[in-house]
Length: 255
Image (cartoon, rainbow, N blue to C red; front, side, top):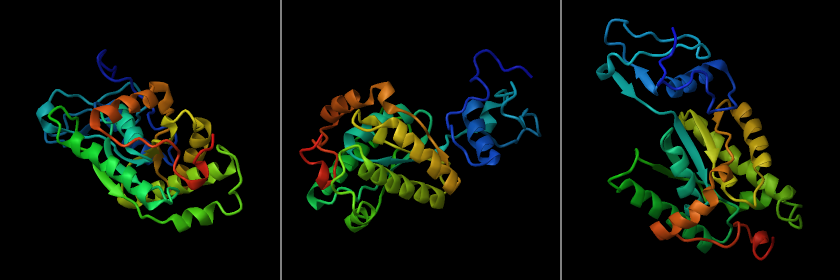
């Protein structure tokens, strides 16, 4: 069956890295078939494909008997402005839950400022009449001791070096673990928003972790949608706190 001209192209992977075909089918079908979850109340009149790579589609002839659903995404977030810019690039495709887990921010006052900024944005967005869906929020544990344990011996590394790699890894690993236990379809991070962070490194780590935990990873370079500049604009619009360093005590005053 040929897909109608106005349908989404079949077989488009918005999740690049999947552990198994069953999860791949689940997520890609939601995306390619108008994000439609078939209730099948019409006695099997829907043509549900068994192969998402074929040019087949789910008929919307009986649209009143379908339910529009989005894949669930756990978005690891480092701060309010980066989260805000990432959200506007993801909210139309995913049911987003923001996960604030940043033990690298060892200064409690700084941690709380960024946490509050995160909550302010989400509250304002969710109360907006023009919002698309609702953003949920989870705060991870404040555990700076875990950060110091993970980067022990790397304190003198330059910014962007091995210390940063380990910092990215254990935060993304915690996000993947939380997403897996919470039953989410996939996870991703706001870390690629910053022009000071290597997308290639973040992508490499995310790909490895998603295979290890058996959960989808949204592998996107958010810099390509000018998310960093947009974060500036959204910070002003929502009156969000904007920090001037990455977060850990080693990044203060460093480049």
